[in-house]
Length: 277
Image 1 (cartoon, helix red, strand yellow):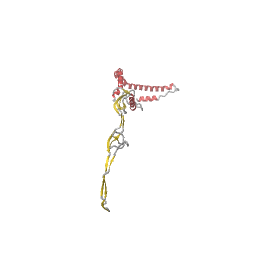
Image 2 (tube, one colour; image 1 turned 45 degrees about the horizontal axis):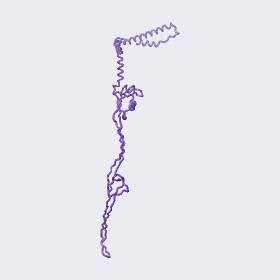
Image 3 (tube, helix red, strand yellow; image 1 turned 90 degrees about the vertical axis):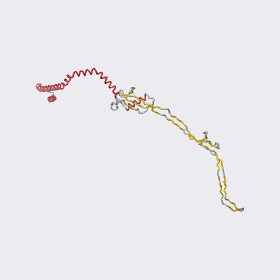
Image 4 (cartoon, one colour; image 1 turned 180 degrees about the vertical axis):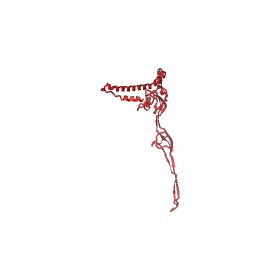
């Protein structure tokens, strides 16, 4: 090996012969150069046979096995290509499908426009290919299960009512009586006709017939309003009433079922799939 390295160094030192130099003067140099080239070529040849002999021996010993392997490959290459196609096509089937719920309820019935909205949503938040570097996040035929709530409106509640409650009130005209007394004091006094006792009590019993009646906001028992010109009867019965105006307007929206759709990766993009899981 050291001899080869020395020869290589000498080859690097070979210089062109000047055309002005006489041939007789160049013979010695040519002989030296020829010797260097011969030694170098011999070293390369020996190195080649030394390094390739192992390969040649291995081939000679295992040629039958190698030829059988080549023949086996040629015979079964189509089967292996078919197997590769099957593995590539069905590789996603060995992965569990991804599942997710669409965040917004959708009104029943489910339409093609709703399917496109969900498809765009999946493409936005779960892209097959990363925009920044183009790397793939999902493989071919990978499935994605999207469920969403469907809702519908129930019968609208539209109520206009005037509930009320009342009670009967009754009054009558009556006689008001009082008891009055007048007390006179002073005792006996002397008059020219004689003596007189001024001590006395005078009783009185005045009475008066009083009419009582109701005015608005009370109403008559038949529901008609009271007028100021209505005559006051001996017994007047009226109705005290409370009333409210009730307006109720309400629309009930309720979820009725869950809609499930299946998407899968095809040509590096999400598409709708009508196949099952």
